[in-house]
Image (cartoon, rainbow, N blue to C red):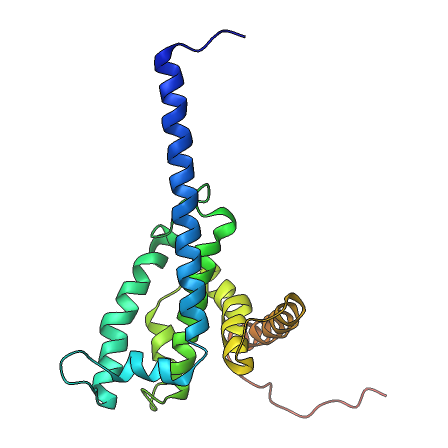
Length: 196
């Protein structure tokens, strides 16, 4: 093996330092979203996010809806646009951990938007405004929503078995909704034949 010259050696050290910084940044971002998601299991935290502002201390229901749709959603959409270009590349976000945490965070905000009745006439406005593409929607509906809502329901992180069970149930329900939408929700007319 050829001995490295000083320039090559320095280049390798810079590369190692960069990789270490990326790993530390990834770990910090993951830990931040895990902490935020754990905080969001509490109704008081969710109410504060939607109904509190710095200036007056409180928001009306209409102001809370406008804040959610005009401030929260656009900031989250930056991550999801164009198939997720707002997220770090896969070689940095190993296993798309941060992407999953942000999607789970979005699911939890969507849950609280519905259950706190921010917009009783259109409870799905938050998630609809996200305009997820087909792949993002599938992951959201079959993994991140059941995981986030399960955490809220149980008041803690889910075990792997609980995650798997909720994800399977959500996948079946999501597939049924998609199939119903394909059929247009129309029932076939006429009487059923007796098939004895």
